Length: 219
Ligand SMILES: NC(=O)c1ccc[n+]([C@@H]2O[C@H](COP(=O)([O-])OP(=O)(O)OC[C@H]3O[C@@H](n4cnc5c(N)ncnc54)[C@H](OP(=O)(O)O)[C@@H]3O)[C@@H](O)[C@H]2O)c1
Image (cartoon, rainbow, N blue to C red; front, side, top):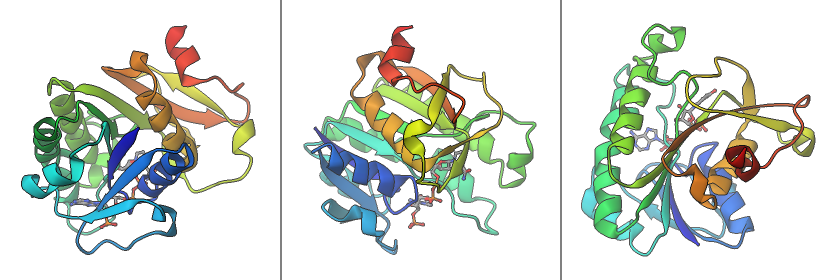
């Protein structure tokens, strides 16, 4: 398996890269020209480009089996950030994936994506633009999966005792999940054909018995 990860310098992105390398996969980590390189990218091939540069992106995606999109607007006073990254960065990535022959694309989105009336929209209508990005992906004709996590946590402790609460779209509203578990779900989804063309919401809890994604999808 060979995957590319955009937003690989981000806190979820580098964990997706690191977990994939741990599974023995080859990984191309796609960063912006000015992105800082987290330690978790050690062992990955690093490509620096702007996502709007579809020719460069197509070259970076050549030979990959899947693309994981783990980008997200950094906290900023630029209220156009979510529009730029969650919506407008999606068409060039889908176009480049198609041109490079990458048919499998997974997007890390968010619980409540697509909602208009939500306090998170005070940050540049972020949930509206995430909803649009999801829609463009679903209409792309590619084999897509959207993972919608709850609030993201940096915790790395006790994760094996933490079960993931999976649901279909628009079933969960709150709660959180460590980024490490989100990364794991993303890669499990790439290995699970039943995850294709699905929106999957994920949060986690120590009270939840651990269930594999494939088992949840089968049930
Ligand atoms: N924070 C939460 O609680 C929460 C909850 C649910 C869902 N989410 C979503 O989950 C995803 C991952 O979140 P995270 O907190 O792990 O991410 P993060 O650490 O904020 O990283 C964001 C990544 O996106 C990249 N990026 C930002 N703007 C970009 C642009 N215009 N063009 C290309 N790349 C750009 C960043 O690159 P640089 O390093 O160059 O800045 C970085 O690699 C995001 O979509 C986020 O909205 C977050």
